[in-house]
Length: 317
Image (tube, helix red, strand yellow):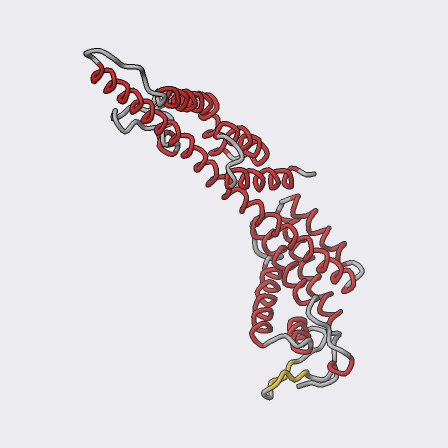
């Protein structure tokens, strides 16, 4: 199991643990510490470190003290710095004291009323302490839950994104390989040149991107002498030099909607223009990388359009 998959498993399991109250607060903190280590989450790591070891008194952890519900309600400016395990131990001790005190006492003599009152006050003090410690434990668990839930959804999105990218890349690479036996080799050359990063390599990479568009146009719509009609009396010249027109004609022939055809036409035209300009004007490395990525994506979308059947390829309108 990879690191990502392990983190996703731990996060999902931890959320269930909290929802079903299967773990004590200290156990939640320890399990969340493993998740923080797997994903390298700085905030969660910091918070859990304080909960495991205790909070500093120099004011550096003020925000986390508030999120953990550790400020004293009766003594302004004071807080409970003890580690969560010690807070749990104090909570258990307070509960045991309450249980023992509820058994009552054997009072007699002149001070029975005073003894009874002090007994009740002692129960009240322990109950108040138990409430404070229980509240801290609950707030710590709630804070961990919120942060783990956020991490869990980020991991899910990342997994979905990676899956979609991988699936799309397989389709696009397969289509590019079919479009031109050297298409994937061209992509590798672009990658190598962009890794070099010098102006000459960037210019050559953009020239290769333009040639990649040319080769895809030749594959999906070879040059024709007769103009291609796309409806409403509009015709396109689709000769050897009309690369962009042939790409547009193919999207029409493949049955793409007009809105999609227009988007693809504008995108390809802009990329073709930038690739051509990049051979004469200075283009930054970052810009060249994005031009390459956008070229790869838009060609992939065009090449993976539903291919027209032989009977549907003949009509011009």
